[in-house]
Length: 121
Image (cartoon, rainbow, N blue to C red; front, side):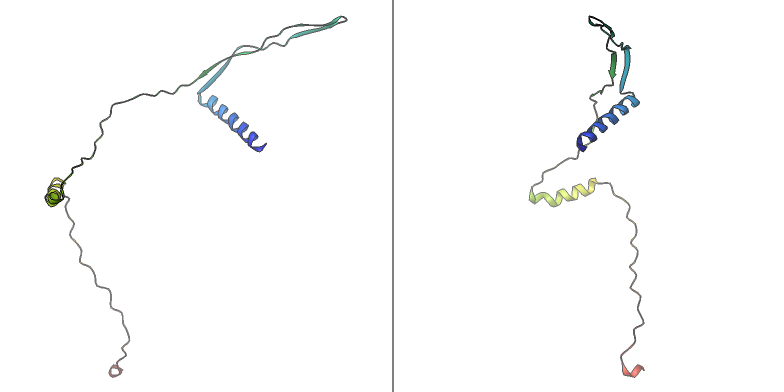
């Protein structure tokens, strides 16, 4: 029962969102009229009413294609014996980035460690 109620609420919220965003446009083209009923001694006489009519227009989804240029990587198959020369050629073709000078590594700070030598006491 809860699942049915939840689905019904979701459908109502989706319909409200569709109308609010303009994706769904509902206009009434013919109003409703109730039937005319007369009760007489011999029975009941009814003249038909009319149901309302609505014009519903929905938005559309356009699907199309475009031409785009996409760069793809090149794949070169090199036999095992020629691999070293192919690697060298690949390095030459890559743009060289300026290398930043390496900073000298700092030595770890020496800690004051108490000596265990008996002569330094």
